[in-house]
Length: 266
Image (cartoon, rainbow, N blue to C red; front, side, top):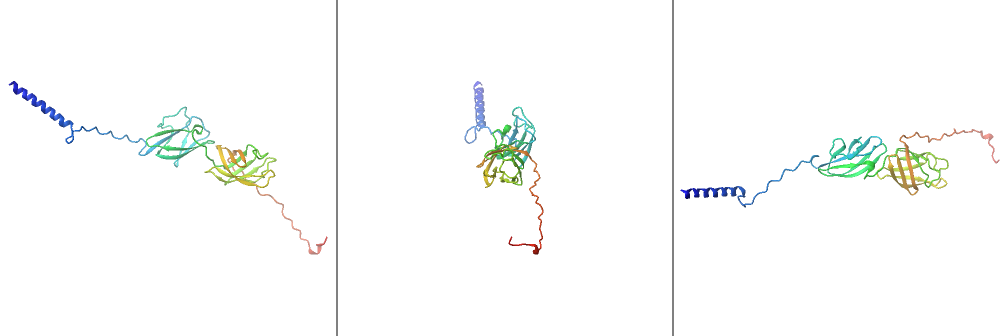
C-alpha cells in the first residue's frame, strides 16, 4: 500500500515539472521570449512637430509683434523669470521641425533670430535686449536728423527726408556743403541693409555716390558705414513732409520793338 502511494506522488511530481517546462519554453527553441516593448508615447505637439515659446523680462515700448513662418503673434507679458515652456500664458507657436527665421518688433525695438524647431521638444527663446539675436534692417521712411558732423564740417543737424526709395535734403545747417533738395540717399536695399550715400568735396561740388552699409541700433537710430565716413542719424518723424521743390520764376517779359527803332553798330 505504501509503495502504491509513493509511486502516485512521484508520478504527480513529474507531471507538474513537465507542464511547467512546456509553459515556460518556446515550442521550437526552448528560449524564453522577452516581454513586448511598451507602445510609443504620442507627440504632444503633433506628428513631426515641435514648439517655440517666446518671453522677455523687460518692458518694451509699444505692442510686440513676433513674425515667424507667415504667422504673427502679439506678446504683451513681461516675466520676472523664465516661464514654463508649455504654459498657455506665454506667446508660443507649434511648427514642423526645421529651420526658421524670427522677426520681433516693438515701437523702437527690432530683433531677428535663426532658430531650429526640433520634434517633440519645446524651446524657450528669451528675446530680452535682443539677447542672442541680431538687429537687422528697418524701413527708412520718414525724416532723419544727422547727429554728428563726421568728415563733413557743419553738417550736424542736416535733415534728410526718405520716401519711395529716395532720401532728399530738406534742411541744411549754415556752412554745410549739401544743398537743399540734394538726393542724399538712393537705392536702399532693406534685405542687405545697404544704400548709396552722396558725398561732396569741400567746395560743395563733384558729387559721388558711395555704396554704404547701414547699422540699425534700434528702429529710430542708425549709422552709415561707408567710404565717406561713419555717420549717425536719428529718425525724428515717420511722416513725409510736403515737398516744395518748385522754384517760382518771374514771368518772362518780351519787348516787341519795331524794326525801324533797332539801331546796329553801336
